[in-house]
Image (cartoon, rainbow, N blue to C red; front, side, top):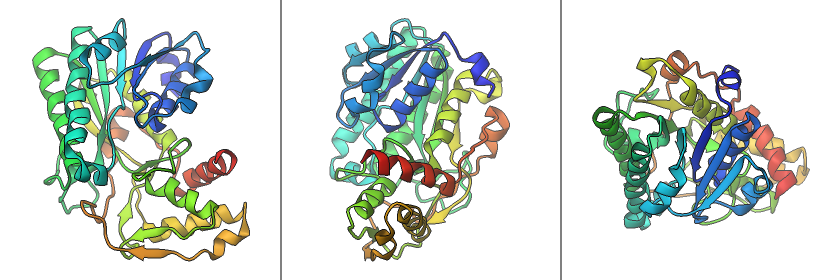
Length: 329
C-alpha cells in the first residue's frame, strides 16, 4: 500500500502500545522501518504483547501513565507522530467507576494532547469510539450526526473529539480521530470482567462453556478486524489532503451482524478444531445497561479522504482470529 513508501524512518509514539490495538500498531510500524516509542502503564496492556520487541533497536518502552504529565512529556520527546490508543475501555466499567474512566480518558487525553503540542508533534491520531453515536437512531452512522451519549465512557470519548478540535483550531496541531467499531482480532484479551464479546465467547467455547448473550441476540454490530484498524491508523499518518485532517472518521467494515450471527460463525470455525463445540448451548441473559441496540458505520468518508479500503469482513477476520486463539490460548 501507499504508506509503505511514505511511512518509514519516522519516530512514532504509540500510547497504550502494549494493548491489543497498540501492540499490533507497534509491530506494523517497525515492519515499515520506523522507530517506535511505546508508552504503557500495564493496567490493561500486557507485557507479552510486546515481549518480542524489547530487544529491537527500533523499539523503546516507556513505562508510565498518561495521567502523569511528566510521563507524557518523556514519551513525546523527539516524536514525529502520536498514535494515541491508551484508554480505559468498556461501557460497563465506566458505569461502575466513572471517575477512573474520566481521569484516564479525559485528563490523560488532555495531558497527551498538550505534551504533543508542546513537543512540536506534527500529527496526533487518536482512538475515538462508535459509542459517541449514543442514542442516534439513524443507520448507517454518519460522522456528522451523533446523539446523546449513553454511558460515562461514551462521554469521555466525545470529549476527546471536542478537545482535539479545539487544539487543532487554537494551536495548529493536526489531529485525526478514528471512531472504532467493535474491533477484534489477535491479542484481544479473552479474560477479565470487561472482556470484549468475541474473545470472551471464543475462550468460553474452547473451555466447553456456554456463552451468555445479553438479550435475544438480535442486537447488531459492525465488527471490525484488527488489520482494518491498523490500515486506517497508518493512512491517517500519511494523508496530506487538508480536508482529510482535523476531523473524525468511522473505522469499520461497513456491514453489520447480529450476536446470533456471530455465535453461529464462531461455532462453525471453532468446530474445525474441535467438533464438540458445534453442540454447545447458548444462554441468554438481560440486555446490558448502556448498550446501543444496533451499530453500522458508513465508511464513505474514510474511503474518500483517507483511501481506506478494509480487507477483512467479519467472517474473514473471525477465521484469522479463531486460528490465533486456538494456537495461543
